[in-house]
Image (cartoon, rainbow, N blue to C red; front, side):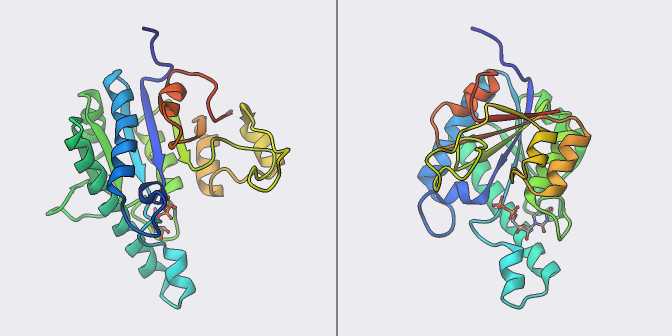
Amino acid sequence: MTTPAYQRILLKLSGEALMGDDAYGINPDVVSRIVGEVAEVARMGVQVGVVIGGGNIFRGMAGAASGMDRATADYMGMLATVMNAMALADAMRAAGVVARVQSALNIEQVVEPYIRGKAIRYLENGRVVIFGAGTGNPFFTTDTAAALRGAEIGAQIVLKATKVDGIYTADPKRDPNAERFSRISFDEAISRNLQVMDATAFALCRDQKLPLNVFSIFKPGALKRVVMGEDEGTLVYC
Ligand code: UDP
C-alpha cells in the first residue's frame, strides 16, 4: 500500500454537513457516513484533528440579524459547535474510533478544555481530536478556528469539507462552463477574488504556509484520495 501524503491533517467540517438534506440539526445517517470516511483515513495511521461548525443549529450572524447582541449570539453559535462535536465523537465511538472532544470554552462537566499539548499527545496516540467552540471568541468563525488549530497542532494541511467538490472559476450551479481548479496559489485565489474561506482564516493559512484542500465530504472516498495526495477537490498552495 502506498503511504499517505500527509501524516497529520486538520479537517474542517461545516455544521451544515451534519444535517444532510434536513432543514436543521443532526442527521444520524449523514453523521455516520462522514464518520466512516474519517475512520478510513484514521485507520491508515493518519492523525486527524477536526474542527466542527455549528451552522446546522445556530449562527451568530443570524441571531444578530434578528436583533440579538452579536457577541451573545456568537457564544450561542460556539455552544452549538460543542453539541456537534459531541455528536460526532459519539458516532466515532459507535464506529470503533476513539475520539476526544476539546472545547475552547470551559464546560468541564461536559467536555475537556482545549489544551494544545494534550491534543497533540492524543493525536500521537492515534485518537481523533474534535475541537469544539471555535476559537472561543465572538466575531470569528470555525474556518478561522480550523486555520488556528491546524497551525497550532502542526497539521500539514487543512482540509475544508464543503458541499461542492472544490473551487471553481464560477458558481458551477449557475454556470455550466465553470471549471474546477485542480491547484491554485493563495495569491491567485485572492487576485481572482475567489471566496474560499473567510478572510481571517485565509490570511492565517497563507501566513503560516499551511496549504488547504477544498473537497466534498459527500463524494465517497474523496477524503481518502485527498489524504493520498491524489487530484481531488482543489489544492490551495503557498
Ligand atoms: N463562532 C464564534 N467564534 C468562533 C467560531 C464560531 O463566535 O471562533 C460562532 C459564530 O456565531 C458562528 C457559529 O459559531 O456563526 C457557528 O460557526 P460557523 O458559522 O463557522 O459554522 P459553520 O458555518 O462551519 O457550520
